[in-house]
Amino acid sequence: MKAVTWHGKRDVRVEEVTDPAVKEPTDAVIKVTSTGICGSDLHLYEVLGPFMGEGDILGHEAMGIVEEVGADVRHISPGDRVVVPFNISCGHCYMCDRKLYAQCETTQNREYNMGAALFGYTKLYGEVPGGQAEYLRVPQAQFGPIKVPQGPPDERFVYLSDVLPTAWQAVEFADVPEGGEVTVLGLGPIGQMCCRVARHRGLRVIGVDGVPERLAMAQRHGVEIVDASAVDDVPDAVRDLTAGRGTVSVIDAVGMEAHGSPMAHLAHTLTALLPGRVAAPMMTTAGVDRLAALNQAIDIVRRGGTISVSGVYGGMADPMPMLRMFDKGVTLRMGQAHVRRWIDDLLPLVLDDSDPLGTEDLATHILPLGHAPHGYKIFQKKRDRAIKVLLTP
Image (cartoon, rainbow, N blue to C red; front, side, top):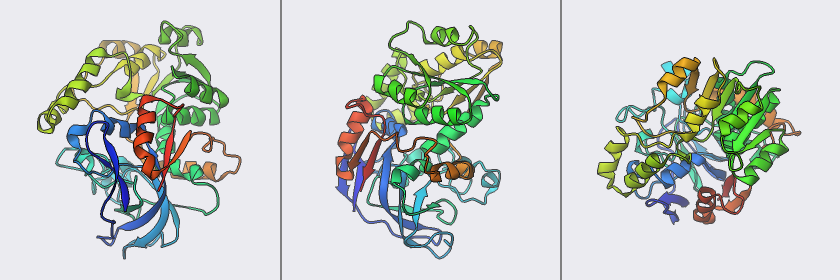
């Protein structure tokens, strides 16, 4: 089969690889019909290379048609249309019983002391072959895959793999009171959906970004915007809209891709140039993140408010302004999305033909799998008005 494989910094290729097969009674194999390029994939494209192996298959946002199932998989059958959550969880361990599926103890990678395994995402998370491919082996398929109906386009459902649960959890964690307001930093795919989920709940939403097409997309969905490229001070601009206090909650949907942190940018660059055996231990002990977005969130949030972090950070020793956070009485919540925890809330919304979350107004590019290198490039460089890229094997 054809798959998108990693070969180094900004070097992804579409190659012929071995077809996956059912290996365990809890496995399934699906024929992929749509798969996304996620902002988190750009971290593999750039700075997390020390934890990648040449030829690793990328991708963790996939859906398709079931081809084969193992003997212990009973809730799906060949021919069913399914979405595959990006984290691999068993559904019955100590953590799964508490709906903390991103911390599944059955699949977690104890070698690196990390949480549940993820598709297509480094040695840290099990080095499981990903979904940017023609076929995908799905471990723990007795629990993970989400069955969806035939008929509506893939765009209606594919975001259940990651984007929608991540955004839903980010808004949940933001703990915005009824009728309250929230600032969303970063209007990429996750930020856009955070805005829409919050608007669906009747909240006032202020979206911050500096890319014109992202701002325009957010405005289409009723979001007030702050153009980061047109104001001198983003926190001041938000306070000007909120009686000088800031918003009761802030969602950081940017993570370590933020601009405005020159020393961390240098750390990114140097880490990418080092041999993997040197860079990997450095990343697990050093501060390599660009913390501009998180620092803005701390500045923007109203005293006594909550910051919800959905953007991915990678360093282990990044400095945080603890005095400022303590003085403001800030609550901070974060973590990988517990995908299956939120599906009962989300499925009725994506099944609604009125499309209340605008799932069919997110992908700006739908490309053949063979064009994946181009898709990564335009997404990473924010070229050709790219906001969300889907691949069709």
